[in-house]
Length: 163
Image 1 (cartoon, rainbow, N blue to C red):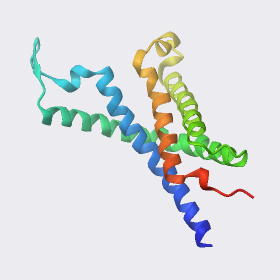
Image 2: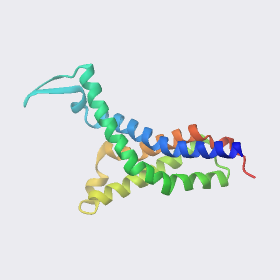
Image 3: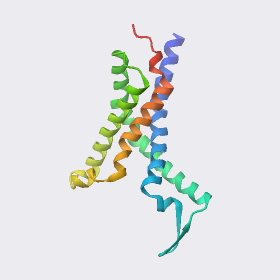
Image 4: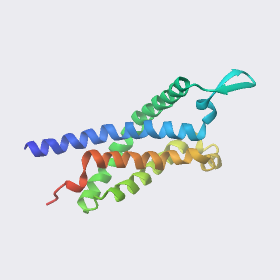
């Protein structure tokens, strides 16, 4: 009984923690890639900028990390409940519990969630703009991959004994 409870706790912890950590990390990384001028520079006047201090860079990154945290709650948790946990159960059932298969499955699920979100918020008005968004298109696969990797590290499905 204790072993079963421990496995449930690991599943719940992985399902709650992984999406939030992954979206926080990917939002921070993508912010540095997509909006470097918002992070590494400070506007002095409308046409004069200076390099940001370490404290200003950290403050900007914390802001993007908090946005990622919010997206983890709004998109990550529902995606984990609707897609991630059933996908985990399926992969365990077919004995595909390796790290790589989880990471690739997470990237695929993250891409699907990203496309649903983008098309749901603006894509039907201008579908071409969604598909030409540049580095923003990395948000889904990157977040999905990070979520699945963290889920795998917390839950360790490769250690599950299936009868």
